[in-house]
Length: 113
Length: 117
Image 1: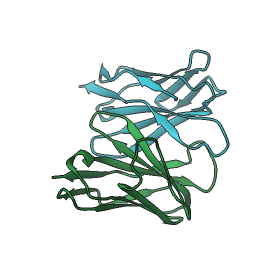
Image 2 (image 1 turned 90 degrees about the horizontal axis):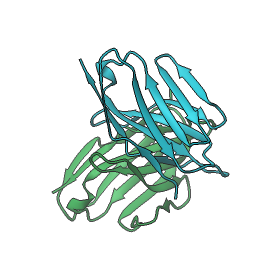
Image 3 (image 1 turned 120 degrees about the vertical axis):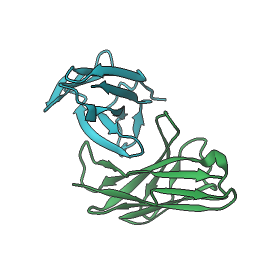
Image 4 (image 1 turned 45 degrees about the horizontal axis):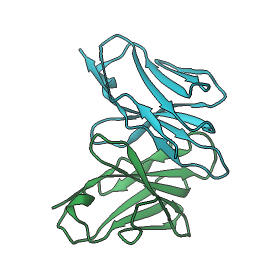
């Protein structure tokens, strides 16, 4: 089946940029997502990218997609302590009615003041 | 924006009892709701897909008789953990898909923490 892989931990200093990487195996993925989960809470959609796009920028967030290598990254500029959370990469496959998401294990981002 | 609520947010129960978790879409109609389970420091594992008015579709390895899902209306789906045991302790998260299509049409609830003693 489909698989999504992420590194488990990332630690950065406040004010620096954070880059969280993700790889996936489903070549028919239509959309790829980044979610943020704070302790004890549900998932908050941060951003998404359609599979025919290379890049998407939304304020401090930049998503890069290399479809050939099936590699997705999330860059957070000027990282703040409030960005400390677990970030999940997810992909949605193709096919009529295919709305299921496959999630990675999540990357725990720790921001050092 | 689209809001999904879950009730209760946390529950502690004795082994052998049944627990019902509700998932509601507050300001939109959801034809499809998804139930996920998340173990500590793990990813979300899809348990089942629930469509309004029809039987839920369970993922491989998920016992349908243990995790009963009912999607009786376009705004409510329930997950009942029957005869719960300590190994059922987990964080259960639902998501709801709005009728209107779009890439980010799946909205997540805040989760329910279940602890079985």
